[in-house]
Image 1 (cartoon, rainbow, N blue to C red):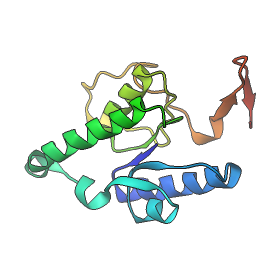
Image 2: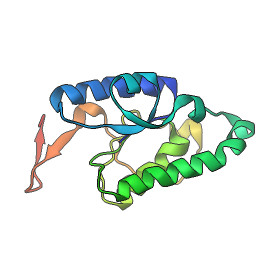
Image 3: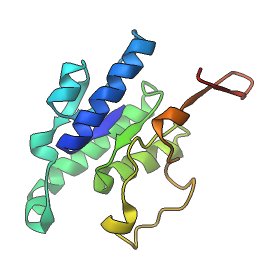
Length: 152
């Protein structure tokens, strides 16, 4: 599951998806994003035109849609069809999905970490609480015995 709610996140996410598909061609991607992700074959549950909101005046009318989208994505997490959640910025929405994924013991790789200090200083984020923040080059596949293999 790849989650990008802004044009810049869509661009970055598309590049990550392209790299992952080169390594694992049978991979299937679902999520939220824009044209670039769609070009990479991502099954989108919502597109940027409905996600890009700023300020209270734009957010309030879209709250019912955003709550339905959140429930739909969490249902997908519950289905067992998701192996990894890759949020890309868009902290207001993505941190909630990341938290839900971690509660379900799903790995979360925040590709571009939200700038919490600039976004909301009072947001309750603790290391390991809702997501593990690492750069993509630190992704490691864990073997059945639990050993992480670099570059795997």
